[in-house]
Length: 232
Image 1 (cartoon, rainbow, N blue to C red):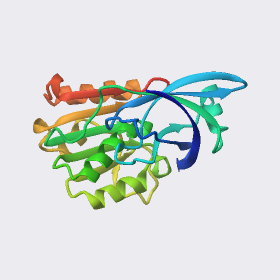
Image 2 (cartoon, rainbow, N blue to C red):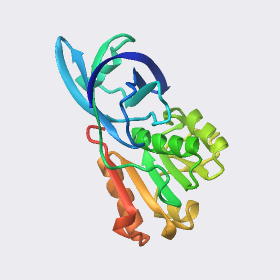
Image 3 (cartoon, rainbow, N blue to C red):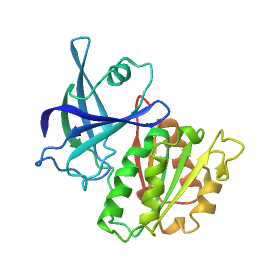
Image 4 (tube, helix red, strand yellow):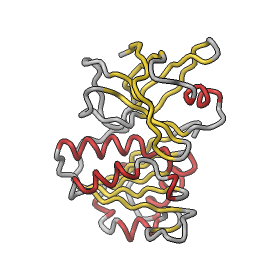
């Protein structure tokens, strides 16, 4: 489906990270984890990129994607958007989806790779899915954790959800895990990993490293679902 719309709301999620919301047409349907093409105008010309939806299908009034703001021209154009500005959306696309079809799931990601995971987790929580989910989420520091409050609230609402933050450069007061997600972290935080289907997302190097860690642990290839974020 392709439709023209306008920016409804812009939310700051973390340091240099913003969510962009648009009105959701009633006929626009999607699965949690899918992505869209977004076209905006910059210097009088239209430019297009694709983004995973950080909203989920239970949120009927809007769709949302989330972006780390960088010095890339498209990113700077996004940062200049204001409510009411024009945009065109095409989608949904992608097969990296989860809506509760597996009883035990491990989700591993870093940085902005959290967006499809958030959509999946929120959907499962809203729908009361009986899937046991453990999320291992790598960030640089406390201020870089995207959707920190939202994830904490989902964990409070969903007794089957466990969120583990791993910080590579934490402050002295940080009481959680330190360092990067590794095979050892997976073993310690997801001891039943042999019974899980894993979803891995993020920048290419991270996805490659996490996939190797899962293979080292003996997780079969058909139990590893991957989504790579180009232009991270």
